[in-house]
Image 1 (cartoon, one colour):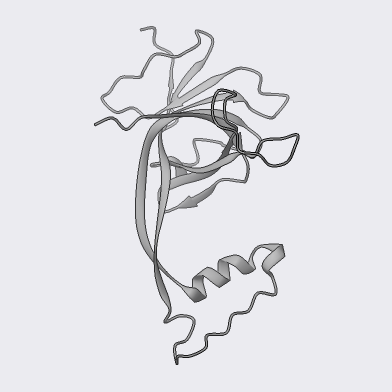
Image 2 (tube, one colour):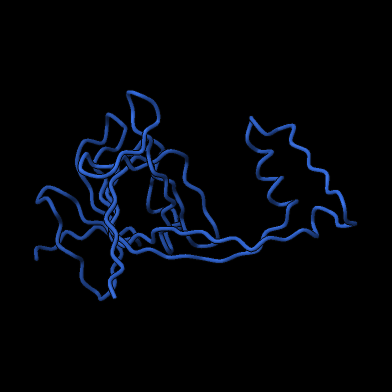
Length: 174
């Protein structure tokens, strides 16, 4: 079975960390040969996906909002259970939902007793190529990749810098 993903998109929010992993959210706009996802008469809407970098929370990878990245990796799904109370708490962090309140009728359950099974699909990054750092002082293309079998994959551009997820720069010639 094949489970490979290559995405190119823009980081739309600041990355966050959970345990040893780094997460960030990309917006990806579809190629013109794919079905359109219309936002309005003039623009297409983007598709949003979370990207997970296993072990990336060690501070050696610096992803920022506005960066344009190409991510090579694979799809992964996770199941989890969330209470209504947790869901509302997350929604209240959004400015548009600050006054959100929910009443549960026809039963004696509290918000922390109402549970729902949820699922999330994310891309686990094995290699990240920085196409545009969104900063005037970073001009060159860099490639960040996970070392899986002791070897780095070849860079797409001879001028790109290969960096493993552990942050070590590979300066050896192949």
